Length: 214
Image (cartoon, rainbow, N blue to C red; front, side):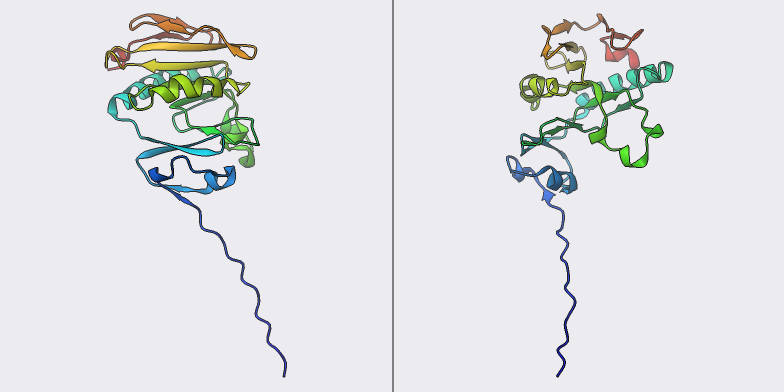
């Protein structure tokens, strides 16, 4: 009697569904990239472990939109300096042994992504020149301590801006880290109402006052 051989069936693994309880979980970069997420939280991969933080509230969102809008207006005027501004970017660190990928509140890129081939339109292939974090009470330590040395590991990032409105909700100050070689210079603090100018973005003058946009 002839034996009937059944074709083998290859099982496709389902993506991991991430929850806040997964904070601290070890993950590969591939699993993290393919994972689904419970909404309401931010999921970052830091040195091969998942770090989960709550999505920020409205004041944080207002400050992020204020600055992103100004950078987008500048991009329209100076497309050779800024190619893309995103509030949903991922920034990959060049460390394959302990994968790290951060999600800044704002990231600015030189590349004009629409001119890239489809296969290159991925965050891992882009090079941020500026990243911005807006402080919230729950994330201040992450942005002031954890992220400072991490963003320094990305050679393309020339400046790291931190918007701090913890003391006065509608009167933030700006903290600026500027790269020199493989280190940050001493941070600059720009008080509410003062103006910051940078050689990174020629002709860009930032008045640290979100109320001007209302």
